[in-house]
Image (cartoon, rainbow, N blue to C red; front, side, top):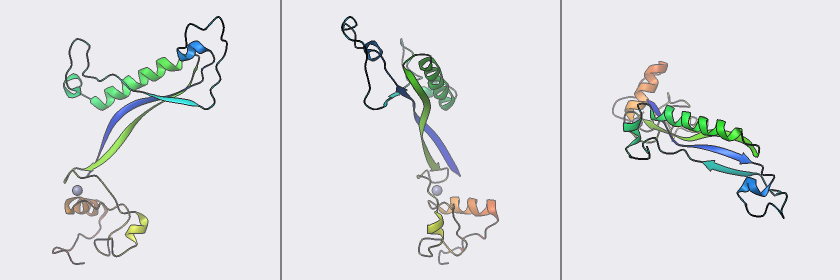
Length: 157
Ligand SMILES: [Zn+2]
């Protein structure tokens, strides 16, 4: 089975500063007026670790019963707060998804349409697009779910 892990949560923030102070350029307010970005400025704002509680630090799993949901919520809160600032133009919450196989723990990969059409890359004539490639158990599970004939034992197709 394909397992999805979400990690590296972050808030992508595009800013459009109008004054030097919007960029933290202080001390020049009496002689400087505007700033003009030459290209969109996008930065990643990373949430504080869930297990970082200021006075004590522990693993995220000890601090939260649902690490993924709590990171998402923390990022949403950051995004909501930043959206209220005048020089913030756009925010989006994002993360990195990795897919692994529940049986062999390897990275999840599937046959593409082109690969499924190439006999040298398939298991047998029943291989179709989307079939996992990591291990026999994943292939068997995929085929059982779809009523596709199982792999012949012994390998050779
Ligand atoms: Zn596998």
